[in-house]
Length: 478
Image (cartoon, rainbow, N blue to C red):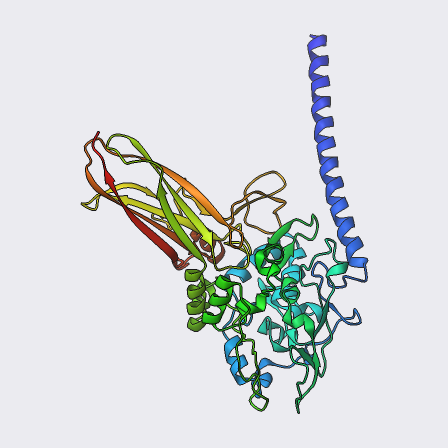
């Protein structure tokens, strides 16, 4: 009896020791993380950490140092009208982003406030007046304008050589708000402000600072659109982000497909000269969902056009189709019109997928893949092009602050392709012609993610059919 009691006592001591050690390890990791954050915050290079945005003197500015976009519209009316309704103008009020930002504020005890705000409300961050209170982000009116005229045109340089990865990331821009406005013309003259030429404003390195997001603690690349471009044939040919995203849609499509820099004559200022090349300011990518939600139909329409020009499909069969035999087909998806991966940006929530339908001559379905279920979610087993983010324990997550790695990244690089194979049983008694149709579909977010973020009354998210291909195959009798 004494021996048994002694054994139980030893077992309890072992369990307690393991539990204590585990708790100690977890506490140590937490303390190390806190210490690392505090050390970075103390570094004068990052006074607005975890955003890497900065001012010329490293000191906070005030909102009144920035012009309201409506003031800029007085001389740049066409550019203002292009910008208004864009994702840049709606960066602070984007309902899906804002909902996720609020979740991050609560779950990270405010660590994501400035991280996300550095790009979505930069003036609020560098003014130190961005506050999460009463379940809302509160800041100045000019900060709520998102990515606006005076924000971009007071940028002096990128500080990417000082970042933890030596890459542009997390708003690694230096601003010098004031009367000098910087842009792509060397001979600009204005009665309202001083002007200064900026080569940076003509290069992809300018866009990279916000379209490249790294986890501020583990430096994992959550969003890497710039690097996708940087190592592509587009960069080799000198095609910049601005050549596709700051051009009229028809010229953007031509540039992306032909790898030829476009030229767009125009008049950026109502009292200025006609320019050989004028950059438009819709800044449209693939996000057609949010502009539509915010009634920016023009921008939503351009996004749909871009999606429809981005890819091509081919269907091939590897053998003769015979009744009663398993047949295979291959669908090749080629990225022909995007200077970065398809899809890009927050690839853990983007959804580009193949919808395959094989029907007999009477319209009966023989095979299908890529259907949506009754709740609007893509059915299991479908071919989806995106990334699968996981947390430190290997559990799937779409929360950027939890992602430590991608379990897989199934996206298609610029001018690259992916070939997917499908197998189906041809019914023994089937004869005639089969119609094989492949559709490449796109949605900015899974329906389940939108439901989680927006709650009750969430609309059904729209889907764009990017491109499609059909072939007919004759079934041979055994």
